[in-house]
Length: 555
Image (cartoon, rainbow, N blue to C red; front, side, top):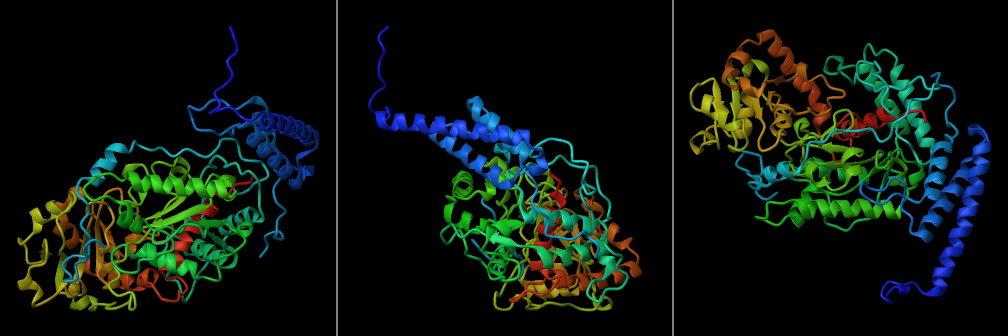
């Protein structure tokens, strides 16, 4: 059969084709030579510089031959044998960085009539997203037994114990920051006992000794690199007002921080993705479309861009990157990028375990804070003493989600001790507004809305009212550090009909202690124009830091 030349539309010029074949041949010979040398040398003698040269040559080989990485998506054609062999050799021969440490000896609508502080969601969007999202099971980045040289191989928790070792993540190369994380993990496991700290009230914490040591190491070691890419308003545009203000305040304070932020990404333990989920919704969602596809595509393209432009995402497949999202849709915008969804540390207000996006132990539950005045974020903080709170329980708000209609059905207008309303009636607000009700109530009911999170939880803490949280599958903020049982009540959704009985069974002495603890924990949920030690900014950052330290493994 006669040979047909490829059409001119797709054919490469002869000179360019000849050049590519020549370069590919040279790259192949160089890489194979380097690989043979590296295989012959002990791992401890394989210099990182040689490995990086090998990696560079491998990249050149792929570029010239259009060869895909060995980690290509499922369904793509298998990579040619040469690059696969070299990549396997390089991955197995990466030497750890030299330790820097001595041996460790030492809004659409905001309601300002105070009857509700929530923005109505777009009807049907969540349901549509839920149907599109398949159940997600977290799988480790890679498999393989931990090395015998490590004495810190398991997950940390605030009890100070290590869980069975997780499978290792494979890094394309090691940095001094990795060694610092391992050092921090060992130090946290062996944290000295804290008996009396004037700044930390021990009963509020799962393990105050672990928390204090981890926090000290964060202050001393943590370095964060912030990507400068991305145009406003979606990037670098903090929204400081409303119920999604947590992500904006964090963005503002981290971008202005001089202690944790570094310009050299090679020194970073964490990489911050500075986009706003609220701005994504505001600028990309098409009203009435009932789809988050444009938001998800935008986020995927952004991650693809930084992973192509910079080497840092690819080094850990996103495991040392994090973002902060308070809008309800924050988790769903990750669905089109597997590494973002599986590996990145997601600080989310919508911390719902039931939907397969939030991963406990890796992700962070972000407090949802309703900021009415950005210039005065601490306005109206405080409330009446425990003995002067005449209302047993209070709730007022919009009737959306599965829990609130049931709450209103059983308790709305049926019991003078249980002040449960939809929107707070005007005849009531003339005598006592929303905030005054919270300041005068023993217990503030915090039921989920469309999603599990509610700004009322932090509001209750601000007004020194014990939060009663009704939201199954909700991971409470700072659950890696705080013992919520000391200052809140969690009621299963099925027990709403028994709500008054549950509250009345709490002894008065217990109530007095819990209300006092609410006042003590308040400092950990306050925004300050200039961050203060142990405040909400530092607590969020600590949870992200603790998650990253928790993942650290000996290579």
